[in-house]
Amino acid sequence: MYIAKKLREQNICEYLIYMWQIEDIIRAYKFDIDALKDNYLTKFNPTEQQMAELVEWYGNIIEMMRSEQVMESGHIQINKNVIINLTDLHDCLLKSDKFRFYSQAYYKALPYIVEIRNKGDHKDISEIENCFDALYGVMMLRLQKKPVNPDTEKAVKDITTLLGMLSDYYTQQKKGELEL
Image 1 (cartoon, helix red, strand yellow):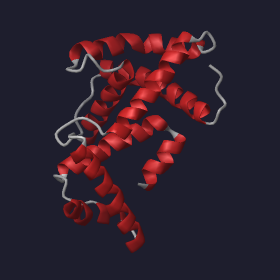
Image 2 (image 1 turned 90 degrees about the vertical axis):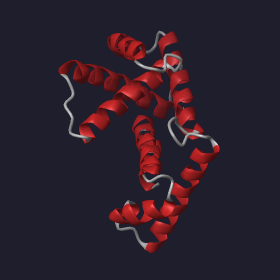
Image 3 (image 1 turned 30 degrees about the vertical axis):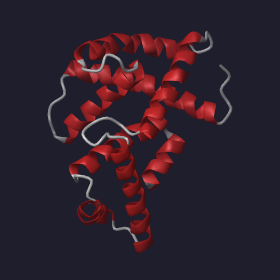
């Protein structure tokens, strides 16, 4: 909860990856708030007040996941909204001639995005969500200590650059400092 709030303010892309991880953690604990509390949240040594806030926050996410029927897979609407907002900004940045460096980063990452779309199950999702899927997948491989091939590493590097720029522009937009 505290990390999510900080990330949402500082780096929207890291926030989204973090929230996807939270969804998966909830799934791993089978939506059991008590198991989550006893076996996961206690590892952070929260005070009683912090624990109560964490339990409430995780409980709210659990309820959203249940009500939005994303218990097996998928993402809650608040996370989908972030993708929508980032995709809209991405499209605006590409249409403007003011953001050439962003366009260059996009076209550098585009072959990887196309490859991801062609290999994936979800060809109907945005390119930006495909980028997040790729980064999340590589993060999961690393967490499992599985190898990541050099071509994938190169793709991740270029996609990370693109999303980093997008995140910076998003922050500027939220502050009213971005003129499209």
